Image 1 (cartoon, rainbow, N blue to C red):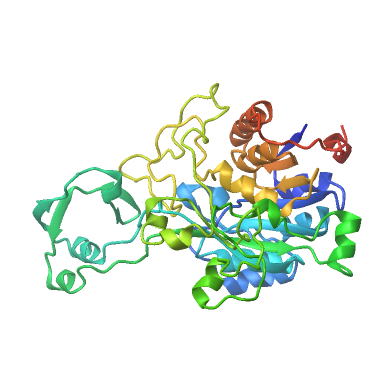
Image 2: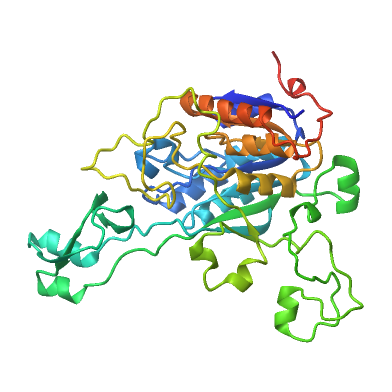
Length: 419
């Protein structure tokens, strides 16, 4: 039976409780650092001196914990506790991926790949430049119509520091606003990158796998199931389309029973990611989000909003998901689908392995580990989120679907810690 341990406090301090080379994989969703970008020269001076850079200001939803991406000190601890060849998978925001990945490189990891998680639920958070010009000029815009469904989430528009529902269609009031009508400041978010890094291996991958059980990717365990006829050979493909689709156009070639080779692209199966791409989307893993997933195991908690901002301040921010800020029992603002996290932990964790998440949040990685049969160690700074994580993980541990094959762990997590 899989087991888990939650450590409450700063992850840099708490990870010191784990011995060297004691976990098999790190899968995490850290702060994206979506605040105002600092002076990167100053950041680099700190990081190269192995000194923590402390960023002032608030990030997503005004939360101080999201003010900046984790620095190398966090990843150095992850590096230490990982077995040689152990993989690290970490989400980042599209505009802070480069900074977050740099910190991981500085900690000693080698970057192996980037996985793209693509979804259709992102909401544009672009500033309407024309409206901003009129607002700065003190000019009142004429209402020329109404949106078809005023007040709906899909019609929120970014204004200043927050979000407000704007049911009116207005016309530019000044010549300058007319000139910049239709211009904005951002694109619709539709993906989040995941860095795939690995603790370096001494010697060959084969020798490392035999000694430590780490260093490889579970290809067959992550194949994309299909009824199509596939080929595992590399010959006898007569055009690029057949090569891309891995279609078997020769009777002599054999088909892999488990499906297509896993790619560094994952989608959510939404209409936005499949319409017009039906032919292509079926070649990649689909991690669908369940509506009941978020609150499973949280019956004892009072429903809350994940931000205390009022309507005047708005409920926006830079996170492309969970846009509505509805009252929920699991009110963490950046919950990842369990199906997605199951796929990721399965990809990089050996049988009977242990997964570490230094930024546990509401416990999606731990929940995934319980279902997949891995042990889990999580760190969480917030007592409030840690309680939610514990309930969700415990629920998953006690309610695994009968047809899920769970593997007994041969290592007790109690050995990792001093009582």
